[in-house]
Image (tube, rainbow, N blue to C red; front, top):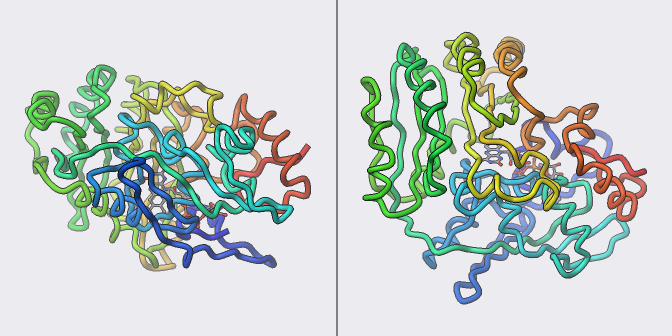
Length: 377
Ligand SMILES: Cc1cc2nc3c(=O)[nH]c(=O)nc-3n(C[C@H](O)[C@H](O)[C@H](O)COP(=O)(O)OP(=O)(O)OC[C@H]3O[C@@H](n4cnc5c(N)ncnc54)[C@H](O)[C@@H]3O)c2cc1C
């Protein structure tokens, strides 16, 4: 199945098979009285955000607006509001799915609950999801948000401050570091900030961060939520050649900070970024959904993008090298970003056996296998 075609490991395109392209099935409708959004299987996150915001509502969506709800949600779905509202799967209330036997099923916590449990983290293993129903939350789209940027020479101070600071943060605050190189060669560390709440309270919460060191730029201000939600759309635009590896991190230790600093590679093609979790995303029980990384405080991604095919070999090799230095501090990977067939069972952890039983029931022939594959028993 192809939703938004965003799969980094290329899971939307198969060789010698059929691609079910959902990109024309792309509408979203929001019902403000029920606080629900109905998104068709190939709808883009921009359409989901836009439909909800029109009614002063929102749900957790990812950080690049041309990703589709399909792959994004089925793998978990992290976004800038997940500390307050949980992952996308935590807001999923029902779905319509076409299973391998050709049946169209409406599933929820009440209807076929095992299958509904499995699609919340179990990837595209169980069928083609043609509609997602999400819970929406009241939201003021004018949010305190932006990036604070320091020169890389201050990276140790920024990371060590963050390691002491993050555990006590409110659910309203999404904040995490990234290390990159600007197109002009300036090496930087930045913190992305989104405060989903009273801006005066948010200003107080981020005060110590803003006072840290000597930033090159402090862009945190009141601005429309969609400014942040689209700020990386061009960097990761279609046609950019891109490679990323990811890993889940439950604690930001001194060892991890040292590794981040030692592994940093100044190359405008590459970056290390984080996807902050914790908060509501962490309070969901480990086996309440099939998403296996509830203990994570953050996800780290390493990699980047370039336009020229001749950069592929060196870009991929450097990404892998950088990642390998951080890997000892990670516990599993985010299946929406990484794809290692051999490690899929281990990555699902204690959820795997139950997933395998459900896969055996709904897709015994493993028709849907270009994913973090659960092999039928
Ligand atoms: C630039 C970029 C930014 C990203 N940002 C985030 C982020 O902020 N948060 C986050 O959590 N993830 C993020 N991701 C990862 C993203 O969630 C995954 O790549 C996701 O799989 C993309 O979904 P898609 O439908 O666009 O991709 P596709 O490549 O079309 O599909 C990916 C996988 O999902 C399956 N699939 C897609 N739609 C359906 C459907 N309707 N029913 C059944 N199976 C389906 C496909 O078969 C395939 O296996 C990002 C990826 C990119 C490239």
